[in-house]
Structure formats: structure tokens, C-alpha cells
Length: 402
View 1 (cartoon, rainbow, N blue to C red):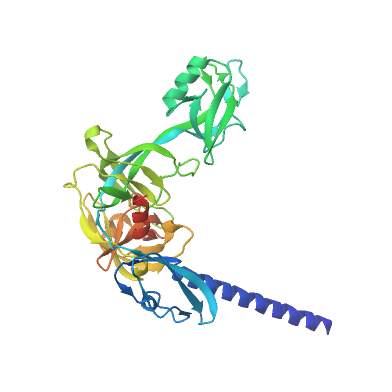
View 2: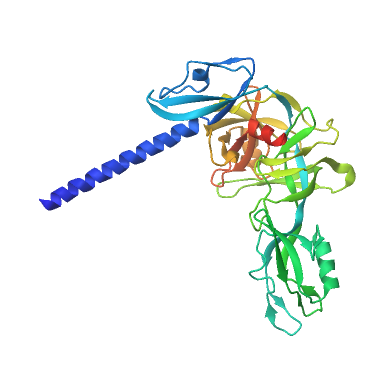
């Protein structure tokens, strides 16, 4: 009898846990569909019930946006349970020039980036690691004995002059500047070294997403991180260059493809500066001639205007910007990673034949839906090269204005 009671209690517990899990998943799914914040056009009456149409939720009957400030719109689940307050911000509708052109990227780090520490075979034949537990991957060396440095060359020259004396390095770590002391070791060739692997620049290719009326641009849709540390690069300067596509490594399941390009790092091929490297893309001022670009003036879609269904992307996979058919398959209004706000799938046979879908180098390709600039491609799925993530256009516009 006791065994039956225990079994029944166990079954009841399992049912309760299952019910709780279903409720939590349902709540989470609903939360991802209903935005925490939306922007709406000024001087227009927006029927919130129409924008946030969901049979499980009830809102205020209507909200008239007057442009006087932001509003909080309470919504309830089944008309009873408080669900969330949606922030409604009046804003002017805007238009930008969407591109899809391939560009070259060159960025210099803010100081010298430490990739890792390592051993040095000293002049005495001993293996020593002078920077172990003192410098860490992701550190930025910004000063040498209180003298500011900006690149590897300066660091090497300072070491050459200082000899084997202990040096003080100012290091930016987790946003804070901290002084550390390291004693260089003389290697077998007679040079003094700190036993660190460093980097002071990075380069690559990507896609120009848009240029606004003030010449500000946005590209990539995601930030550029160091390949070794995985950390978002802190930059001091950068430049946007003209680039040419030389070939395509076609993507397939389990093997993302890549656009192979060529960048000539010559002054007359610079078309813009890079002022900011953010998690939502790179931004700066476009300074080149726009005549050589593929530009289309297009209204920016608010994120609540996106819908699952047909869309298109602009990309330069074969040396010329073309529009290819695609489909938005999922939208997440509140994803923790804003670079993964929606899922897009390439459906155009031409692009699937050419690249296999989305490949590296296409990050930043504009996504168009219902005649508006909806967002940009940010990532490709490793297991499905035809699909990837995208970022909302309004998120990129907010970053470009920052």
C-alpha cells in the first residue's frame, strides 16, 4: 500500500513539474513575441491591438501617440494576469540608402592586445615565462613606463631600449586601467622579451548595410572580435576600403562557406572611417564616392512590422549586388542577443546554387520585406547553410546615431 502511495505521489509530482514546464515555456514563447519596447510614428494613431495582435493578451483600447514622450502600455494575460508594460516611444519614420556592396575592413586596436602568454628560452638555456599570471588574454597594453603606446612596433622598441630592467605596463582589463610589473627575459638571440603574443590590428571583408542622409553608415550587423580571445575588439581607428570578390567557397551542412575577396590597402581606395566597433556592427562616416555603390533609398521598418513570410536580401556574391528571394521563418522581439532577432532562410535557387545559402562575408546584407528595410543578416547556421540570424534595422540605426 505504501508503495502505491509513493508511486501516485511520484506521478503527481511529475505531472506538476510537466505542467510548470509547459507554463514556463508558454510564458517565454509569448514574451518573445511581444516586444518590451516599440517605436511608432509621430502624429499617427496606432491601434496597439492591431500591432500586438494576440488573442491571449489584452491592452488599452487604443493609444494615440502625440510625440510628447514615451508611454507605458500595460498588457494582461487572459485579461487578468499582469504580463508586462510595453514602452511606446514616438519617433519620426526614417529612410536610408541600403547597399549590399562588399567592403574591406581594417581596424587598429586601442593599445596592444594580449592574445596569450608563453615561454621564452633564455640566454642561459632555461624556459621562462615572465608574464605568466601577470598579463591575461584580452588585456590591452596602453602605456610602457607611463609612456603611451599604440602598437607592437613601439612596444618592441621600448623593450630594446630598457634592457632587462623591470617595466611597468598600464593595462586595460575589463574596462579598468591597472598597472602591472614585468621583468623582461633575454632570449638566446640577445633580445629582451616579455613572453607574450600580441596583436594591434585586424582586417577582413564584410557587407555594407546602409548609409543615411548624413553620410553615416552601418555594416556587418555584428561586432568584430579577436579570433583568439573571442573578445570584442576595442579600437582606436579604422578604415573602410573598396573590395573585390575573387571567389566563393560554397557552404554546406556542417561547413559554412566564405566569400574570398581582395583588399588593396591604398589611400585612394579608402571609402570611409570606422569610429565604433559594437556588438551590433561597425559604424562610421562614409567618405567615398557613392557613384560606384548600389544604393536604394528605402523606408526603415519598425520591428513590429516584420512578419514571418517572404522577404529578400541584397548581397554581392558574384561581384554585383543582386536581390535574392528569402523567407523570414521566426521573429524574436526580445532575444537576449539582439544579433539574433529573427531567422531568415535563403530560398532563391540562384543564390543557393552560387553560395549554398549564407556564407561568411555576407554579414550585413540588407533584408527587405514589404518594400522596407527590415534588418540585416548576422550569422549563418553551421548545420543549415541556407539559414541564419538577422538583426532589426532599427537596432542598427540606433547604433549608428550613437
